[in-house]
Length: 358
Image (cartoon, rainbow, N blue to C red; front, side, top):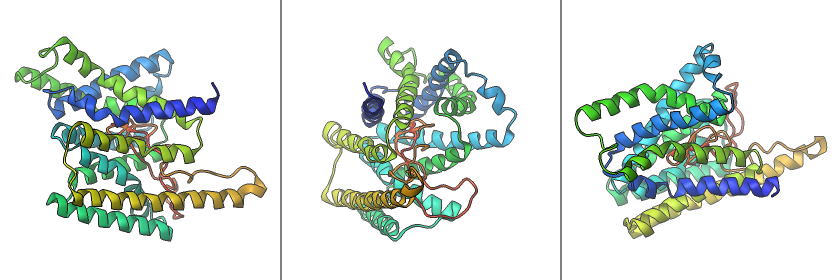
């Protein structure tokens, strides 16, 4: 199999797992969202620690202890992804899968806005149009829901912020997931111990199958992340960026067609505006990438950093260092493509596919 085909296989595998993740989370009932989140943290740390030990890369922690600034950034990234995972799990558990899918559709737009507001980058006119249409979509959905779509907004903001922090940290996928899980490990174990003492822990008390499913949350987080990292090393960013929308599309289909969540006309109109914004956003990204290639052609290969709607450092529904919609270190779906590590201002390229952590 050629590297390109293998890359597509890895990408489809990652996005399919993240896309059908809501169905897996529903199987974890009657475990509550916080218990599921705690298990995901614990078992992710176990799975990735074993992987790093097998690859003899466990020394990453020792190296990080010498870099307090990096540790502070990791703590912030871990907090953001914990919020993302927790809100996503809550949304699935409370039959709001459609709204969680919305969060990952609008994530690329939020990532660009973060680049403008936090890093003071400039947006092209078409990007302003896309963000404006996205804002109109949020207004329409606010009227439909009778409240702002806060689950979608929290997911998009937490994942966009996570991608921003991860881009500055520059940690590899497996190492990034491990250290983030390690930061969250003590609170997660403490919560599970308290839940056990209070008699509310479902782990080991429902059935062997349910216990196994809770333990598999670690693999369900780590495997698609590593597949995504493999895809990012083999595929053009344009292809990877276009494919990132497969995850929220599958999540939306799960919510409407399998879980039978309502989709009234006003809500459909709101989603239609989001899709229109993404079309404008993606077409502008492709045109900008072609212009960059044409400009760079006389001097050598073009920089395709802004070729796709998602940033390679960003999951999930997916970030290469994160896990997808529910995890992109996540998925899930995206990072800010044009973030300048120096903090300087420049054109905003669309976010490359984030490492998801859903």
